[in-house]
Image (tube, rainbow, N blue to C red; front, side):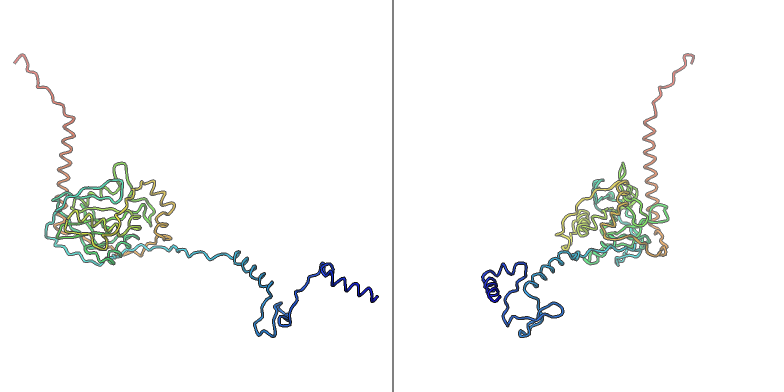
Length: 359
């Protein structure tokens, strides 16, 4: 038996891999590396004085596990802008006070041309020498998102002569027109109605400011202003939202044509020229309303009406009423002249009557 045990021991020494086949061999550890196993499965070295640590193989497995967990863990998405509702404002943003002499007669001193009908910005100009109808101070209508944005930029840049609290009476209409923003230089006889056109109203959800077969739905309003000595410039809401300073620069380019002494302010001179924008049709405006294109562009959730503001008791000034009578008489004369021209096309010259042979 002793001989057999010796032979077996020798065999183990010569061929250890055969004897340990199927068993997990442990690496040789020195006394300094000998660790005791804690209850939590981590190893501690009582002679090292260090905190509990995992073995080399365990560390590698833990790292791999952490990598896998980090890979599977959902990444933090980039912060997105939360859309908020916009409350439609009814109070003026600009603080400029208009000072007009309502007893003085002002006339247009410049001569500029109208712009293309199919692109924003649209420009409609009065005739040189036209008498100017002055506005009255006060306004009751609501103000849009980009009106607020542009007014705040005007205040920030400290640009003079801009107003957003004036109204213009026209004809016998009890409710006056209300420019979105007005540029007024009384002494130079420059009155500009600056409009910001949206494809549809935020509250009523109806298409507005669209083009028609013969022009735009705003043509009558534009004509009412130009007949009273005002220039009208219309920007699209998209232009004001994306290029507000370029829109203001375009206003000053127009002013420079009216009066060469009016220069573009340095804060606007280096801005890019305004990019043109196509005027939409009624059908296009309806489609934009369905997909909420305005809300998406402006980054808002919806439009909310502000509490009703008491209507201001506005009245036309006395000399302004005289201007309205002149305009009315001028229109009647033009209509009468046109009527006579149309009638003359249908009048046939009759031959002179024949003389009787019995006379």
